[in-house]
Amino acid sequence: MTGARYLHQLGRNAKGPFVRYELTPENAGQLETFIDQAQGGTLVLSHPEYLTREQQHHLARLQSLEHRPFRLVGVGSASLVEQAAANQIAAELYYCFAMTQIACQSLSQRPDDIEPLFRHYLRKACLRLNHPVPEIAGELLKGIMRRAWPSNVRELANAAELFAVGVLPLAETVNPQLLLQEPSPLDRRVEEYERQIITEALNIHQGRINEVAEYLQIPRKKLYLRMKKYGLSKEHYKF
Image (cartoon, rainbow, N blue to C red; front, side, top):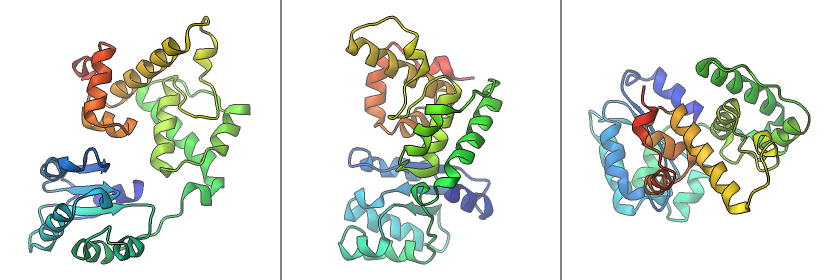
């Protein structure tokens, strides 16, 4: 997604909003809301194949206007040609995307970049949060290097930010804070960990629900239900 932000910053809509969404079958119905938020800026959609054929035609029509209301960028791991051939992407939308295509290597294809990128985003997060930069070594570093990072740089940056505030979302490692706690039932530990992750995400994004939901890669409705369960209010994190 970093490449998409650079495209936005270098385009004529750079002063407009930069709106990005990870499309899922659950949130694809909110396309009109995404479009409204992106007016005058750039709309980045990951996995546009989840949109209905009618929604895809609508996006293509908007992009064909003489004065486009926003710039559309599609992001995906599958080949655009293969998706069009499989009838997952409408022909009109395919031609919109095919005008300019940028192939980016995944992190798994450039493992030497993982550690320096993680350290870069960790320092950046700590500077913004006014936190000391924690040490990365031993098993933690091995876990970072072993992870596949399917969402690439964005997932790596998110993990670095959560690590900066004391939460480590790496399946191959253990949150050091959890090692210091007294033994408790598994369900309770899971709930405590989930609440901590949501709290820190709200703090990082200053209570902006759309960003928090995308950051955690869950639907807004599910996020609101979790916040209600743990007594969390977005208003407490706005500043």
